[in-house]
Length: 314
Image (cartoon, rainbow, N blue to C red):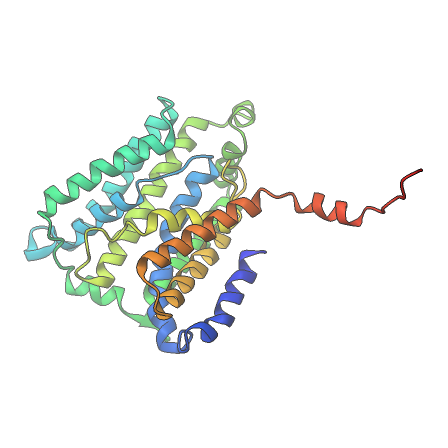
């Protein structure tokens, strides 16, 4: 079932499971988190388009959150400098992973998991176990809205549309996708595959950093584990959006719709009285179901059902 239909279904059945879950106030509270997930999932889409996977999401989101909270608190650094530092941290993390994967042929999950562990330790050292509080001006921007729509959701929508247009309409974007579809073929076409491979992780790290800072600003006093739940959900959103795990085919807009679907699903589960553990379990089941169904050749199944049955000869 296309993710668009799944999103419609979850919004239709939400009031039946948890009354009040699609009221204007409930949607206004849900959309900022959907926007944050869409931005983080955008980065994961770029990596999976190249057949990789990035497990550094929690670490990058946490270190960028510390940049706009702990480092900005008390005027230690100007807020714009803290934002740039957070973006730089995400990009540098992606660069390290990209070079390890592309240049030294380290498995993507190994390289990204190692960087995630390094960042997690760095977060504890820098923060001292206390994340701090975001600057009031930054928080005011994060919690603001325009025409009743949360600013974070509008910003995420803008980023998703721009990324979609760049990938689908620009020469650089088409080359990026071509590398994901097949490195040997891309090399024959004269494309510098190594650069595109590394840039996938750099841009992904930048997206995670942006998501982490926006979430920290929205929460104002975030938890140091704020990115843990995005480890699984970003991958789930990418798979539900139709991106192939082996790379080559992707849809950033469909990934964003999947992020909206997963966020609303999580909100409904919590509103129904389920625990956070149950929410994670349901997300894991959704991911598993998406991967299994993605591997089924439905056209072959339909052909089998439509084949005429011939009586056996006696």
